[in-house]
Length: 321
Image (cartoon, rainbow, N blue to C red):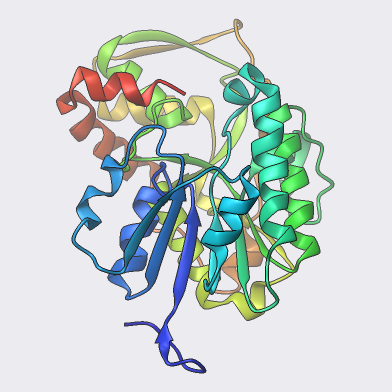
């Protein structure tokens, strides 16, 4: 059991969006470590992703919207840490409903920062999409950001709000891997699914450089930030590993190694609205002791095992973003 030594009580963690792709991986880890956890989520896709935790007395579920300030204030009472995952994620979802993206990603985050108490610690989930197009070299936390999509812009604004209250910002690489709340709109997950089902398809902007991170390593990064909060507060950290910087074509070649009968062909058709073509340095967080453990090959192997055995109904839900 994790205790607050000053108060001799269990440390209480509020996780916004805790039933989502990252949250459904992180919440069980927090409970296993002995934290008291409250999940604040709209449960738009249900609460099934947290069923494995159903008998844990340290878990509380609250159905709520981060745009609902009064409900959020009540959920924030008596918590020690707030891990803020809730948001409209990715440029397609943000472009589909710009007003929802702005009110959720910006005003929802502002509701948290405006009502944060001095003794509460805030850790915010951000994105490498804040960088935009970087022509050469490695992005560090000091690289000027230039978001080119509404998604990146709203996350950049969220970063500013969190920094104003002294929180920790984790600027995550492109995530991949199996979670209790699976997403197939993420690049590696999507490409593996296509390799398994379509067998032959084109890949656009194949030379674009990306950096990746398994969802379990993402969850580990939030735990790491909690454990090292006093060192990391007031700062932004790129989260990933230098060994996980790849071009999209590199990823396709790894997929073809694992799924031999698929054919992936570079194409001039299509584009990424975020213009994500960059390499990222993770020296800052690595110096503190954090490094990813799971490789892209491991993630592809995991996806290859699970995706063919998932029901069509479940697969259809993962695409409904």
